[in-house]
Image (cartoon, rainbow, N blue to C red; front, side, top):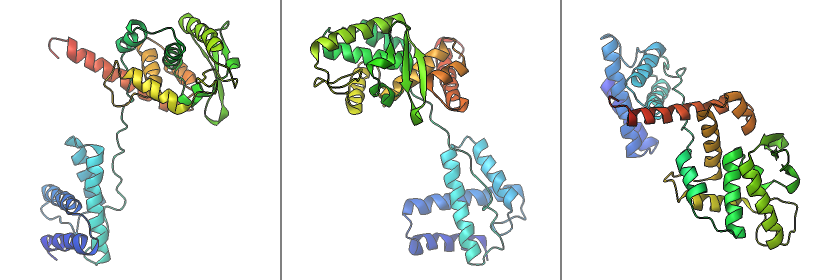
Length: 297
């Protein structure tokens, strides 16, 4: 059967038997036309019926060489795979050359982080009141920024987990694994002030470190809300969550000379591969600085 007729039959199958959307049919058609053009460029004697797995792989690599994103390449490959499954079921081809071909892995988005100067503006230049609400908010934000702990870890802190003399924090992470994180004099002084003010202002109902106005352990949603509100003052990032402050901690540590293994331990990562994504973040930051500063960039 002629290639053109095969493609037309396949598209009608998508439209009328599978009830695929016009957009999906269009995308699959574009993928098939592109694949067909590639085949003809490889060898005039090749066709959709005679292309083998190596040809399909070559086409995928060709798309990647053109700079197509992994999502786009995988969508195109999906169209060709669907076509060959259809053609094989209708005995239009003898074998499915796309079955064993895997697409590229999707690019992982880089972690978002707040720039150091923006954190300085929020924590040092902003006017903070000396009431319980503001002192608690500033303490929470600095604690996230100086230790890189997770939201659940911060909410779960009790007074006994904070050692102001040794300047260290005992954190219970995922799967109840504990780690100890050091912190600096600035955070120690702020924690001391917060504790004194808290014990004056709030009637405690629990051993939790951070309390709401009723003396109960502060909720995750409350912490998320206050972090989002204060980060909105200094950044236009779409994500303004406690996890962004965790990314900000890791990026700041690596930018200022910390070793990858040390940052891994501080964050409580199981694998170094998880921590390595921050090296890409710092390199992206370095590229931006270069492009903004170098006269020939």
